[in-house]
Image (cartoon, rainbow, N blue to C red):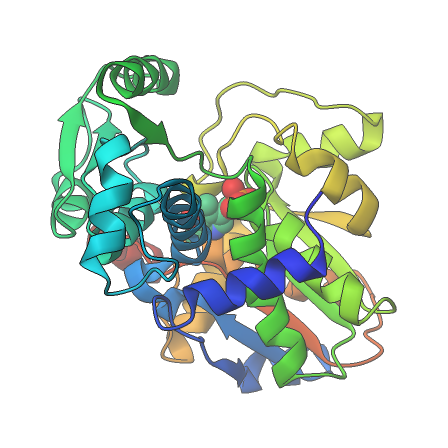
Length: 340
Ligand SMILES: *Cc1c(COP(=O)(O)O)cnc(C)c1O
């Protein structure tokens, strides 16, 4: 389990590596639902999504542990090349398997600490995603078409070359890193009453809900999934991890087929409700956020879609609401087609 202490430690560790994103009031949405709605703008995070938080915490923790285990390394890690060279003698680098936001985040974190990084992506990856990952100096390898092809490859290469695999959500250091967004929300808005969080594998909501419930036990935390990718919703109903197989929601960051085995118990403990949103509600939220001058990817808009949906269904908000805008990486063609 991840506790508040672990999230606070993560916040200290990643300070200066990721940014403290703004929490801004959404005037139009607030007027539409009759309560103050604030947006936690992870679309403005480095690499364009909150995933930089978890990846940076994972990579910095890894280097700290290696540094501590290495007698030659100095006790503080930072710009200290001595510590890193000691650590990296044992470690060949890091590897992950994601063409999306996690791939960029891991490449960014690796670059910040000077570790070699390999990212396995599908053979049919769109070029802009590959370019984004390469821009952080990572080596991109095209492997197969399915995520299991890429994970098999990454695990084999990790064993051969002494690389550490960085998981996208199902790990305590990833969850603690994502939780720092929740800490920032409570610090900026102590009176927060409801927090809406997009849910894929559950890393973001596990961290955010742990921070929010530890500091504000009376605040509600609501997970949001597309109707087309309702694996956590079904898992919560059944009280066990349900796998829904592949799906085609426009919210590509939320297509995960099942919640994680590390994250799901945390979600069960902390999350009050999972709300579902339709594809039309997602694209409508994207248009509304564009009018607020915010470029948000479909996954990142689901929190706002859920608040609008709850209001239409007659939900009464009893205080300030926060929507986590989890990311802003949307291909221009998709953004344009939604706006038209
Ligand atoms: C990864 C991602 C999510 C889902 O996060 P999980 O930790 O997998 O639940 C939501 N939004 C965006 C933009 C993402 O990249």
